[in-house]
Image 1 (cartoon, rainbow, N blue to C red):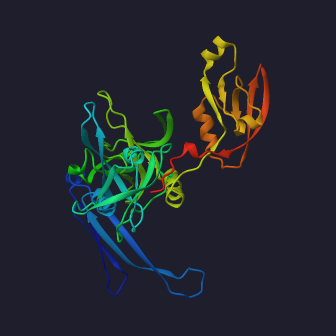
Image 2 (spheres, rainbow, N blue to C red):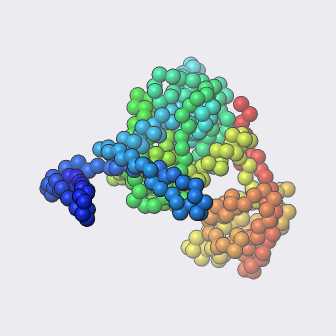
Image 3 (cartoon, one colour):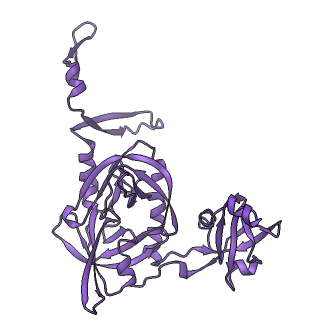
Length: 382
């Protein structure tokens, strides 16, 4: 219950009268309230370096749950994404199929973020139709694909509409385990559009490998289901701090979902909007991860066994040979291609990197100048 303090003033010293309305059991078992305080400050302009700043007003709003305010703020920025395609079945007949996911309004003029895997069919089949349904459920628009990046599972689509409610983005680097996390999206499709699920940030920098790609993700126990992909993971301020992308689904698993951190996603999104593709540096080799047991059996060192060096690539020009074992990049020990790519992808095209390789039992340092390979990016012009 509330504790109220009244101050009355007499001609002498002020007398403080405290009125306590208490119900200990009730306060423990009753509803908990969250108070949002907005402080307005006014600088009186006295030229004293900001010392003469006074608080002029406090507004206190009481609500049963902060999630109500979060949903009201972020909800209008979450949309449904539907992909309709026509394919030929085994008997030669044409059949139509639908796939659905979610999206986040990035800008008021119609740019929308989603997952690459949500619109993958439309990326690979130009005849597929992409549609976006706004949060009100009443407005549906045809969308064009701006660009997609399979490596990060991010994509951008656009609708011909202005005046949209763009999402506010927060910084994922400031997240802490245990923070409130709210997932908003369309689990199982448009019929459950705008569903809000609540949980916490379960872990940070979780590495998850799927389809041969390793992602560094935010883990949450807020329910993320098929159709939530491309939707938002939101913090207590109603700011998007992650793009929901995947969950672990198994009978013995519950409450393990993942989102792409906003700080990782936003640079990709901006580049897709500006250039319609992501150009990453590449070395030009394929490798096999060599663990301790494999190294012992084959009488080589742990690291990345170079299985192939492509012609006319930075690797070839630097003199890397098939049979070399890469043991470090830029002074960092690596044992897997995923670790190698993580360092490489933090560099830019044209940067020079140092690889240390074990060649016939001897360690050799190799300088490699990274080049651009458009083939590793999805290049879309529509």
